[in-house]
Length: 136
Image (tube, rainbow, N blue to C red; front, side):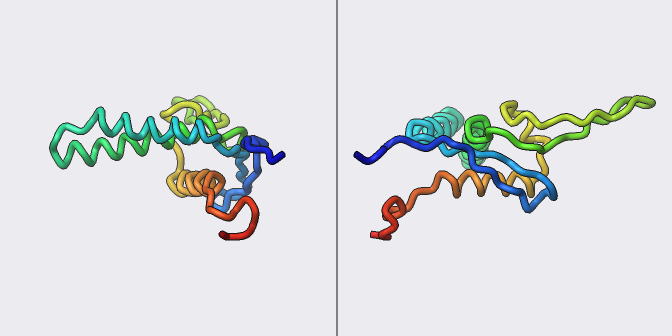
């Protein structure tokens, strides 16, 4: 009988936007995809106040919430670090980025973030005919 569950084995990607960086991603299940859509919809509905500016802000917040969800749930491991500058006379500290924390998005180089976003999207895209290779 055909297996109808998602394979959550991580897939490693070498990042083009950051030399030497890699990231392990796992695909979302159908339930996770639905939860992501729900987060986007709830965030947008919660913030729409009838004005154009409010609607635009709601869409931006919904995109951010959806991205945070994807990063928390799809990124299994990586080697991307940040440098935390020490105070005067103190050494800097290098530590691994924590993609489970929403504030990490505010530190992330946009080129790296855009590449990760695209990898997550590509990993979770499904086209009709893809499973059997028929294209129909």
